[in-house]
Length: 45
Image (tube, rainbow, N blue to C red):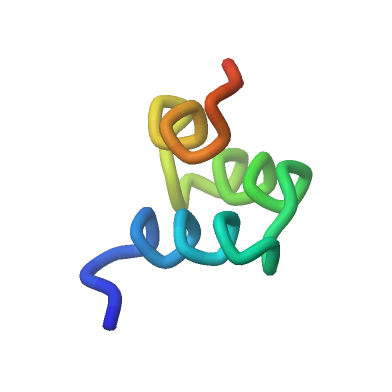
């Protein structure tokens, strides 16, 4: 269903299954980039 972690996390965020605090952890662990975080949330990392 998802080609990569970015698409999966974007979908989860849109469905409210993931929160910004969780997405920040994914950035810290290198799963998504800070730029991808900004695309998903609309806010600067």
